[in-house]
Image 1: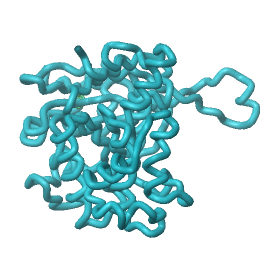
Image 2: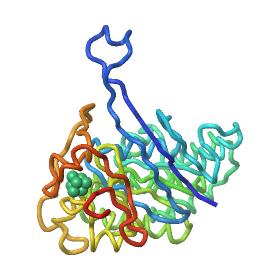
Image 3: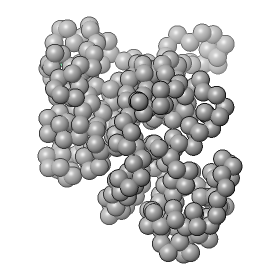
Image 4: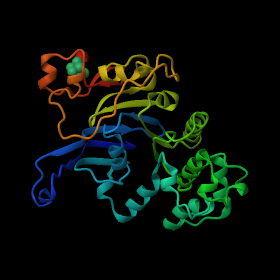
Length: 319
Ligand code: SF4
């Protein structure tokens, strides 16, 4: 049985220019996610790498039902998550969780750690006792639990807040967690330890993760599979080792070129931030920047095709 699958997902946002445009049909649309199909296997860590405005965040929210797509389906255990019965929807909401890069904005500043972790249990009407809260704190290395239970977010360090956020997701016994830039705000020494914690929980509990990141090295560190997103499309996807050692798409090669040794940055990241725009180039959307662009690339959009065993790429160089 397929675990979690996004099929032909589209997320289009209308461009409104001036107040009058609110009352007319939009002429332009930003294609944040543009016909993306992505499968997450049970128990894997899948990394989705892309720069700002690549659509990775919008896709991740759609995958767990927090945002509705403009088109396409999300199938969780073969059921469309936007057409579930009330009971199925309640189970799905519990099993598909998310943690954010900035736990300050997602942790209630007035709650203690205990209240933060209890809240989803209460909202889901799940019976619990203190030992469940203590157990989950132990699992994320906030020990001894008694030292943390009564603290509020401002009394925690950055890594402790992030661990609290993870504990709150884990207490619901999820099957899949979106980790949205989970280490972006942590100090350097703590980035590795939080990524290793995700790996440990993945191993121990078999929870699948979608790691959203703009930094390839985090994906290299813990992912089983990696997908690259560019201007709303997945342009390459494969097992971690294959894409690390042999990136095929010119954009992926550019993105990875500063990571000559695994886990080490040897220069500036080779990407620039881009902003959402309705003006996506026709043909291959990377052709204006691609050093290998051919005539065909300017008119026809390449599909994601199998280049090697399980390694798929959207580029005419690998037809
Ligand atoms: S399809 Fe053409 S333009 Fe696009 S990445 Fe490949 S070679 Fe470059």
